[in-house]
Image (cartoon, rainbow, N blue to C red; front, side):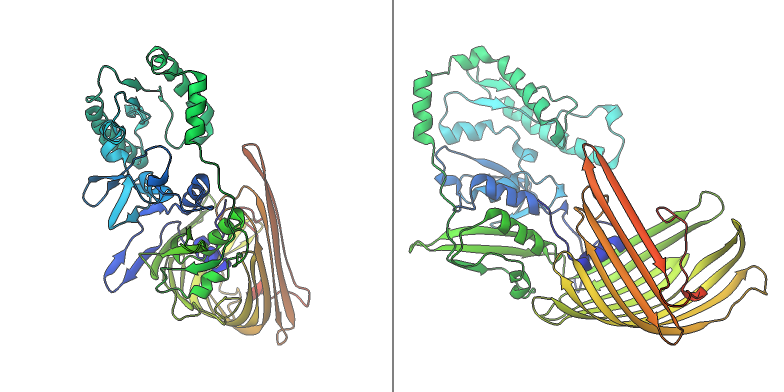
Length: 532
């Protein structure tokens, strides 16, 4: 299950550091509350517990269930004995700092393990149990040699807090209770590829207390009858009578509706619904996009889509850095920052004002204006001014260095191709002004102003923004300057294929002049990673 960022949000993410998005407003700076928001895991839970058939509530389950979470504001234990099952599950697994807290009934909730990782007292009270079977799957404390990074220190801090409340809970065990603790040495909470090994260790720990468990057993016939009594047949996927979107304050609902490929009268298709919600999430306006299925007293099925707008939005600061070196005598760096204002109007207009400083110094202004609520068509204008160092080589020897001032103005109209890409065409005007910093004074230093029409298409179907493992991308840009009697064509394509733990990738680029010759002020360059 993938989220599908739009072409525009992908372009911004490529320019700036991941998770560098910081909210800014009248109240000052606002920050994200987790590295990930949990969008995919919540949709997975919905399907796992059957929320795509009807809203599953804890109090309606055939067996008593309590789910423990931690109120991160007050440090108190919150026990769910009722309410939506998947929401309580999501709240109870929010590792602080990694996953964003979940807001439920005025509480900001994170992993319940911080306050009660082995809730023996709750099990005894909830079930009026004579015997408690307690299973401790908490992560063991890291050894000294394993603590060597900021993340490992944070993990150890959580482990220490968890271990303290586990010791208190275990002190309440009675002689008749059963305690199971698998050997999880060397296995962390994120070792998903070692699930089979983890299960085997759990089975071994259970075998070690088989004698205690055997005295609690019943006959196979009695157990089968008990299971038949408790088992509830899964309901069929319902027919949706109505779709409603609730909770939006800043985003135009039509901007979310464009992604929904499910209408009234259709049978709920969970895979298609998840795909639609992940595409909406990829627009970049939301912390998460969830749903619930409500059945009214008149037996009408309402699919309620519940997007949660970013609490730190809608205006942001973004940061980035470029570091380049040839590992000899040429190294450059550039620091980058931008102010990104979104949802300027009901059609979703956006403004980006950016700056770069270092080996490259630039100011740029970009305004993007969709022309319809579904954002299929748009206008975009871009202004850019700055300078950068440019080194001239001959026979692999540096002979000169220029400080090149560039300025450009562009106006374009385009079409968004869903999550596949964009097409645009327009006019651009450019200034090129080189000033010699190092080298012979007889080298050329003439400035040039030129302009022309351009057309561009960008397509991207890779599975992730950084280090893709599958998918493809392609793009082409054609520029024609009748006054200068030349044109320029840039094209690129690439593909990624996973083979076991390896990723096979291939890429190709082209740059040339279908008309005339490329002038020096618009010439291409070779060198650097993947550009030989």
